[in-house]
Length: 221
Image 1 (cartoon, rainbow, N blue to C red):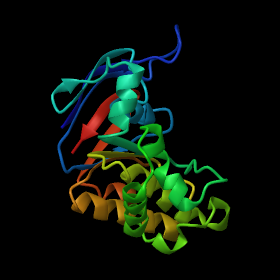
Image 2 (tube, rainbow, N blue to C red; image 1 turned 90 degrees about the horizontal axis):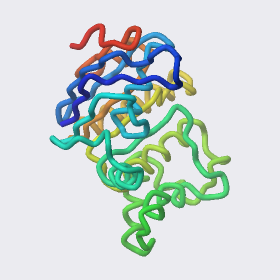
Image 3 (cartoon, rainbow, N blue to C red; image 1 turned 90 degrees about the vertical axis):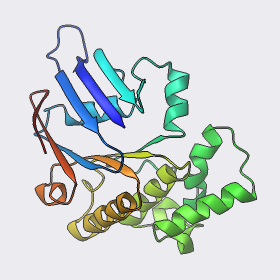
Image 4 (cartoon, rainbow, N blue to C red; image 1 turned 45 degrees about the vertical axis):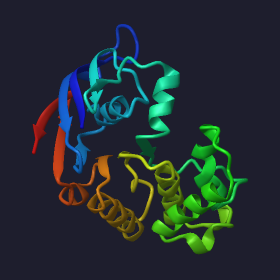
């Protein structure tokens, strides 16, 4: 479903490469956890796979199509349809309600936010257990609830692949476990998940673990 071929990336001329010839294949329905020490290149790999970052060289294929050379407009369109990302920080807009935050990707695609869109947004909030808090502002939600809103926002356009960069990193253990369980449920329903984590207990729950060391794949199981 998603393949990286000989990915290299350097953030600045003369700097040390962050990715050094990475080859990775993600199958449909995988829950893949990318692990590695700080600075190993795991988040850079995630951003390259999700098209948030254009690699210095190499290719990323999605459903057989090379997407690494797409224009910014084309990459934005792909992220607004098939690919979605959640981050360690939720990045919610503080002046918008939970439901309005969930609907933001629809606004970016110039979709009219009518009754159908509102119903879809509410369905996504319900899926993450927050339908009763749709009208609350982010400041009136707990950290775990804010992250659930961010997940609902990622789901609203019906992605086929959900990328997650340390989605539990800023949460306490109990709240983080709840987020991890939600991601596992979404994966069990057919959503492909690619997650970066530094927590071995979460990696153990994934169907695949890809270990990155010094910009290369050290182990893939």
